[in-house]
Image 1 (cartoon, rainbow, N blue to C red):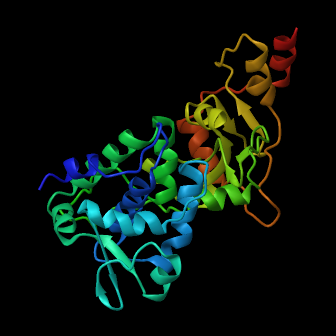
Image 2 (tube, one colour):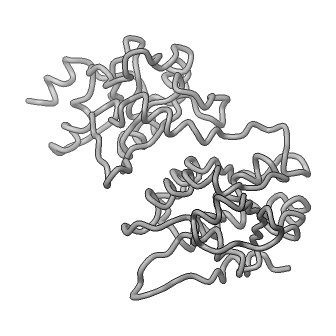
Amino acid sequence: MDWLGRIAALRQWTRDGARAPHKPLLLLYALGRFQEDADGGLSYSVVEEDLKRLLSEYGPPHRSTPAYPFHHLVSDGVWEVRTDRGTGSPGTAVRELRASGAVGRLVPELRAALRREPELLGRMTRLLLDLHFPTSLHGDLCATIGLDLEPPESGGVASARRRRDRRMRELVLTAYAYQCAFCGYDGALGAAPVGLEAAHVRWWAFGGPDDVENGLCLCSLHHKLFDKGVLGVGDDHRILVSRHFVGRGAAARKHVTGLAGRSLTGPQPGVRPVAAQHRSWHTSQVFHGPSRTGADLQTAGT
């Protein structure tokens, strides 16, 4: 079976170039849940709110319901729905999906293929991302869903390897009141934060945990600069700016060099700040020290 071909040929509503990523989002969500529990089903009543948030944040501007892809994806041959009455979707009525105990999952043949070929999950995920979303959203989308694109180290889908915690992004953004810890940026599109990301201080690939004490809420610019070692966090929770960074314009001075020595914004009272061991790791392994001082700033401003 050519599963990638089926994924590429998903039937979607189209009109005048309008986006309809409802089925791709449901499939990505299902693949993420498959990584966690290859045998588990997705009860509509349980996952409805998750799917609503995905559609709100990554779908088109107009409101829509996850009931549509939950029902209509069946016709593409990759998804099945069962209810208390047996096999088959009850339709797109939300009340009926809830009342009938509707449960969806990838079809048995696809689940078997994913078990035989663990790398297939990554290929399907990348295809869905490439076909339906810009590259700038891939990382955020995978983090939100909890998808890990790296192939499992063992032959099975469920390996002993660490899995990302899909809750980290929301926990970190909440801890910092949806503001960039470096500049205070707090943009949103409607109710969904835009341009804000949960940054690992100690990188996940190097043992960094998915928890608030290893996270910072950063805008997209400062997340990139933090991961590149331009910015860091000192022992006193003040912002470090690499002396090696060169920015000739006013924007660079305002958004980068002008941050040197400034206290972090957040976290909220009662939330623990970034743990010392994670700050230390980032400073030694990522940050391009030495950091700028007040004297550097005075010189730069003249």
